[in-house]
Length: 250
Ligand code: PEP
Image 1 (cartoon, helix red, strand yellow):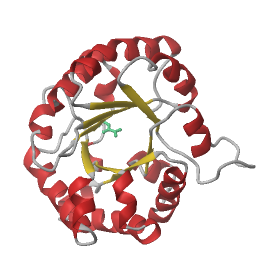
Image 2 (spheres, rainbow, N blue to C red; image 1 turned 180 degrees about the horizontal axis):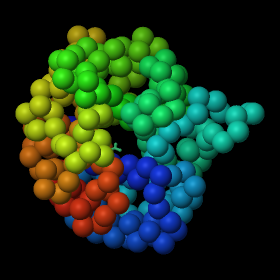
Image 3 (tube, protein in one colour; image 1 turned 90 degrees about the horizontal axis):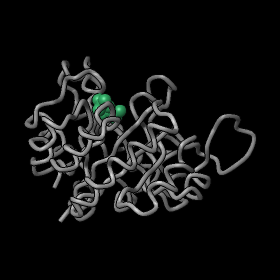
Image 4 (cartoon, rainbow, N blue to C red; image 1 turned 30 degrees about the horizontal axis):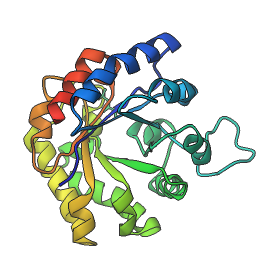
C-alpha cells in the first residue's frame, strides 16, 4: 500500500563533476526499480544542475533545509518558493544536524514544515533520539514530543502530504545502524502514536529509517513492516552503494 522511498542526503558534499557522475550513475538503478521512489537532496547550490540532469530520469530531488520566509532580508537563506521553482519535490526539515548545529527547536521545525507544505513541497520530518536518550529508554517519548509540535501547529491531516524519517542520532554518520528489530519497534510506535490522532493518515504515511544505512543492511531494514525506505547520508554519495540500497527497497 505504501510505496517505498529511498532518499539520499548529500549534506555539505559535492562538486559539479561529482553531481553529474552521481545523477548519471544512479539513473539506471532508479529506472530498474520503478516500484521504488528515488530522491536526492543536494546542497541547494547544485539544485539547478540536478534539475537539468534529473529531467529525463526517475530521480526526484529536494532540499536539506528551507527558511520559514518566502522572501526578504534573511541573508544566506533559501525559501520554499525558490525550492519549488527549481523543481524540488521534497525538503528535509528538522534533520538532527540542523537541530543540534543550528539550534532548531521543535517550534522552529514545525514552522518550517508548515512553510514547506504551504508551497506544495513535501516535508520530510526528521525525528530521533540522542544516544543518551536511547540509553535512558526514552526514545518513544522523544519522538512523540517531536511529532506533537508539528501536529499542534499543522494538524494531523498535514501528514497526508508529508514523510517522516526516524533517524536515531547515535546512528547518523557513526556506522552504527539500528538493528531491524530496534528500528521496527520505533517505527511501529510512531505509526501507533499518529494513529491515536487519525488511523487512516497513520496507515498511509511513509516512515523512513535513517542512520548509517548501507547496501548490506538496507534490505533487512526495509523488509520490516513499518519501515518504508530510507534516508541515507554517507552511502548516498557512492553510486554502487546507493544503487544497492535502491534495490534493497524493491
Ligand atoms: C543522514 O544524514 O540523514 C544520515 C542518515 O546519514 P548517514 O546515512 O551517513 O548515517
